[in-house]
Amino acid sequence: MNRCAAGGAWWRRPAWLGAAAALWLAACSSSPLLIPPSANDVDPAVVARMTSATDKMVVIAVENPAESVPTMAGTTAGGYGSPPGYLAYGSARAMMAALAKDYRLRELTAWPILPLHVHCAVLEITDGQRRDVLLSKLAHDRRVRLAEPLQSFRTLSTSLRYDTGYESLQRGLEEIDALAAQRVTHGDGVRVAVIDTGVDTRHPGLSGRIALTRDFVERDMAHFNRDVHGTAVAGVIAATPSDGRGVMGVAPGARILALKACWSVPETGASLCNSLTLAEALSAAIESHAQVINLSLTGPPDPLLAQLVDYALGHGAIVVGAVPPDGDRHAFPVGVPNVIGADLPGSHVSDVVYAPGRDVLTLTPGGHYDFLSGSSFSAAYVSGIAALLLAVDPHLDAAHVYAALKGSVSSTGATQTVNACNALAAVAGGACAAVASQH
Image (cartoon, rainbow, N blue to C red; front, top):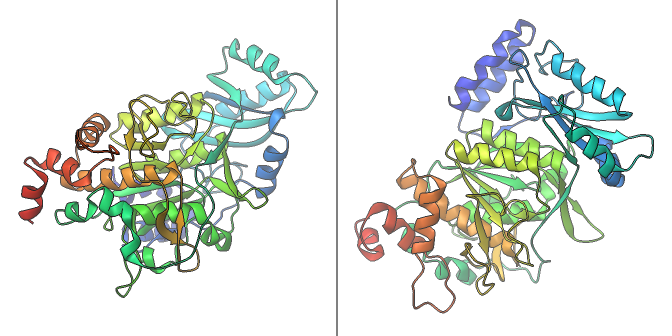
C-alpha cells in the first residue's frame, strides 16, 4: 500500500475530514510533506526529563489488540485524548496503566508501534527501586511483551575542519567511482530515510530532494533546519549542485525522508538519541515505505529497535548502519542480522563494507559546505549506492545488495573501498565500463 493509499485511515473521523484531506493531498504531491506539530507529539519537556534521569527510565511494550489503530507513526505519543490520535478501545492502555500501578511507575509518554502490533511506553521509576531488579520482574510478567532500559545512542562524526564550496574536492565520489555509476542512474525516486538529527530543508543542495520531514524531539522547525549532522548525511546521499555550484551526492535523484530522532548537545559537539525517539522514527520510515534506512549512529543492543529493524528488513528495506570506532559488531544497529555495516577503509572489521569517511565534503546548514569525518559518512555513501542499485532493480533485498557491494571491491585495491560502478554492473550484468558506456 503506498503512502497516498494509507491516507484512507483518516477518513474514519468525519470531524477531521478537512485536515485529513489536506494531509492526504500533500502526501500525493511532489513537494515535501512537512508534518506540523500536533497535540499528540512528544512534549520536549518529557524528552528533557528522560535525558536528565536516564537511569530511572524503562521502556515497556504490551500487546496492542486489533481495535487499536494509529493514523500515523509517531503522532500519538504523549496522549490519546485528541485526534488524530489513537483510535483505541483502551485495552492496551488499560494494561499499561495496570503495570504502572503494580510496579509503582509513572508513565511519561506512550505510542503505538503498528508494525510490531504493540503499545509502547516510557515509564519512570518513582520509588527508588533498582532498575535491573525491576526489569527482571517485568521479564517474568505475562502481560509484558518487552521490557528494557531506555538507552542512549550517538552519531558518529567529528567536528568541522574548514569551509569551502568546491565540487572538485569531493574525493569520496572518485574513490567509489560514483560518477561512472551516475551515467546509468541517479537513484531517481528511491526513498531513503535519514534517521538522524534534523536536516536543512532550505539548503540549495537539497532543493527538491526532501520528500518528508518529521521531528520526534523538539517541535522546532527552525532548529531542525540548523542541525549539522543530518544535513551532512543527507548531502552525501542526495545533494545536487545549485546553479552549477556545490557538491554532488551519490544518488542525486533519491528522495530523502528526514526523520529527526537525535538532538545536538552543544557543550560536547555530539548528537544523542534514545530508544523512544529512534523507535518512533523507525516506525515512520516503515510506514512511509522507505526503501533504504540510513542509521549513522551507534549504541547498545536494543531489543525493541532490533525488532523494528528486522521488520523493515523483512519487508524489503535495505538498512545501513555505521560501525562504531571500537568496531563492536554487537552494537546497534550493526549488530542486527542483515544490517549492512559501513566503516572507514582500513579498520579491518569483518563482514562490513568500506566507504570514504575521512574529510568528506558535504552540506552544512545555512547553504554552506564543509569537511567532516566519521563512519557516519561511510554509511551515507553506502546508502547512496544502495539507492542507485534499487533504482535499477527495486526488488533487491539486503542480501543481494550486500553481495553486490562486497563483490564490487577490487581484489588488488589498497584500501578495499566499495565501488559503486562495479556494484551496479553486478546488478545490471556485465562489466562496469560496459554498463556505463551503454548509457
